Length: 219
Ligand SMILES: *Cc1c(COP(=O)(O)O)cnc(C)c1O
Image 1: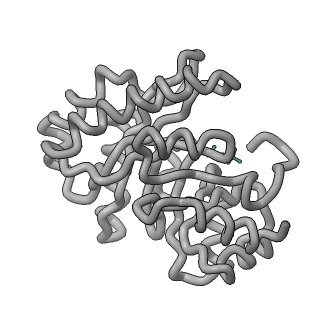
Image 2: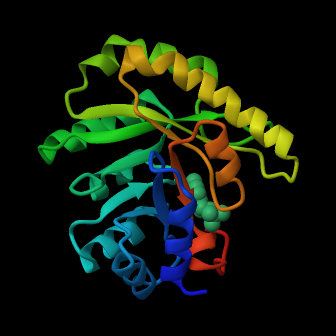
């Protein structure tokens, strides 16, 4: 199936309340252009330089989502155009995003990445640290950063009960925080588990290989 057929088919199965982020990391511009021509306007990348060169080459009504881990010293390169940063996991990083967004006279939307997987993952905040961070005076004072939700990645396993349990944990935390903190976005689910994620409350899925085909290296 072609990229545009994949998108069409995927969109037909997604509830209207669920936003599709087309994860285009490692894929060439022509592939993104084909997705764009099929109506896709939201793309996810995990490397800042790659996202920047794609942003330069492609139409300017695309929303660029940074879905990968972000190093503080690289924030400046995406601050002029990034729409949503999915994997924010520290106050230090929020501070830098606020600073760079301010320089660009923008407000940058962010999601806090929460550790939900059983396996030991390097990135993401402990669940217990999320509420205190959202409530901290320092975060409330940021004028150029808007935390709009949470993001999580499940354990890489065939065990759907375990994956569902991890998604439910994050959904519960999201529900508890969404009203007091004006959260709107719960980003969970990838090619292998997006249906399960939606069943368990996700309203933003990040789908790569199911649209663009397998990647040549593990980006
Ligand atoms: C690569 C990636 C995806 C997409 O993965 P697929 O399995 O190809 O759909 C989603 N989220 C993050 C954070 C990624 O790095």
